[in-house]
Image 1 (spheres, each protein chain N blue to C red):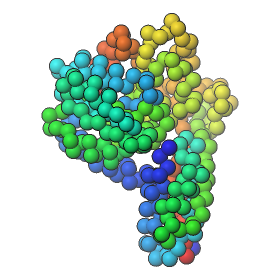
Image 2 (cartoon, each protein chain N blue to C red; image 1 turned 135 degrees about the vertical axis):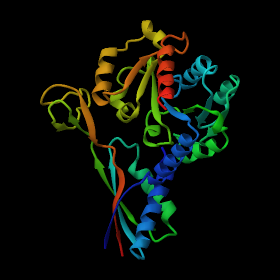
Image 3 (cartoon, rainbow over the protein chains, first blue to last red; image 1 turned 180 degrees about the vertical axis):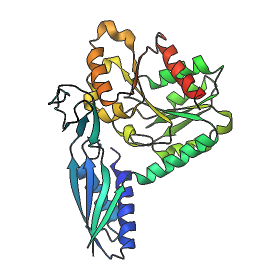
Image 4 (cartoon, helix red, strand yellow; image 1 turned 180 degrees about the horizontal axis):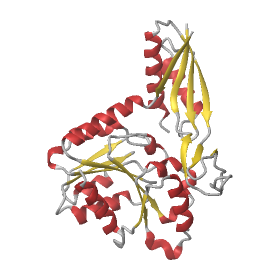
Length: 113
Length: 216
């Protein structure tokens, strides 16, 4: 729902990094987005095409890596992805877990020339 | 050529949020970010809080809504400073909006700032605004399964207030199952049961706020 402002932020970071690398064109932006983030890929791509068209990032490919939600059991230490209906540890049966993946929302790298 | 970036996309927001936090700290203001679905009772909770505390604590309110000033109008009847932010479609408050609102508040005369976020269980959890504490409401009719659907919100909130407990005779709500899933994710969360309509449980919420104010 807030893809426009987020896409602008992402573009700004990519352009800054490209400038630091003295690049003339950004070919790909590699994004890592966790399952818990409310960002929709198609929507980001749509805004990106619009916002970037007059910049060196115009026409760049956005590559999304989605990270599923993963938790670590505080009781036995097992890392697992909770089942959709029951959130218990498959090893010890307890539910006492911290989220260790799924919150990601960053630019991993850019490919430039 | 590949250039490593490894930079959080919300970095710009987070930087403004920490600036807001510094401004609040300098003025010794405790800021609480109140989040929930639309209609769960954020404004009602704020009104109850003002009624209980305004003789002892100097309070101000930031009201975030997509449109309208209905909530801010209700708050201003209580004669506390209030700023309405209309997000113009955005689904959450961000740090920049709150930064602008802080400019319009007499921060030197305030001890407690209640920030009512836009009604939404998803996006507000992702955007820091400079608050000291995140608090969420879940109204009983929304159901006990919400932590499964919106885990981030339930993980980030230090206090989880179940509002509208006066609906209990008409509504199934499994408190045991709810508490189990929430405390499993967020063991430090304080879970309170209140009714903003009858006033039940409000005392507990207010005493949590007062202990936070004393701790500053």
